[in-house]
Picture 1 (spheres, rainbow, N blue to C red):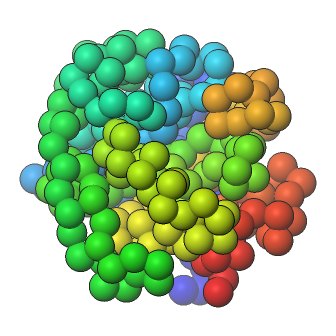
Picture 2: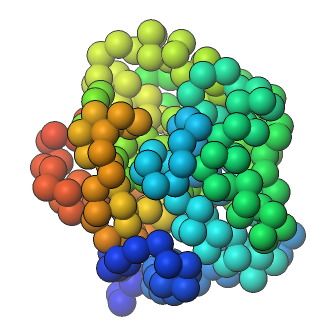
Picture 3: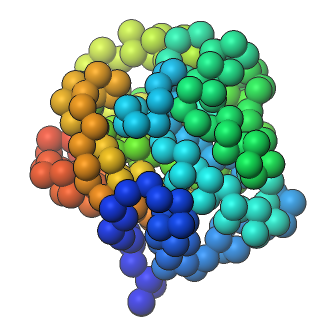
Length: 263
């Protein structure tokens, strides 16, 4: 569409909330504004990265300032924001409580009135467009959402080189089912195809990336925080990851999910 960017990349130097909210709003407005993605009364899953019980400054999880900015935009549009993810390990209430509290997301819900997802159910659904699988077991909170907006964290990753907009959606696979999929698909090429299949199933309406402070080294959890200073947004998860990879000096062929998406 003329005049509309495929990927928006904006400078955002730190997590000062007023700056983050401004940049997130500008990024979303560049793609038509939140009203073009969210209608009044819709339940909107904000699929964030809540890999494990980590504090925001450890750069493992999506920063609460970014999450809060998106929550408030969704509420402006009349949507009902539901914040959720299936962290690594068992998918149960205790695990969710621990990660919501440590990551600062529980405080976001308290400030904004957004819902935290406590539904630990799962459902197997057909994946007709899948290349490597024709069905997937996903969280019911994802299945029941009217709209999915993904909120990824830019990090390097020991297996997929980079974890971003595509990889973050692996979190719709519940708990220990993730390990099962890893075992079924030990080849990185097959696993990358699986991740693309998940994107094609979930079809997030909008993708926003927290690249203010990323992680480099032994990601997704054992690397070091690295100042990047950016917020990215796109309707296209694959295109966003191409830009994010270039931002941190990676070539497309170094990122298996980008190559899988191209194929």
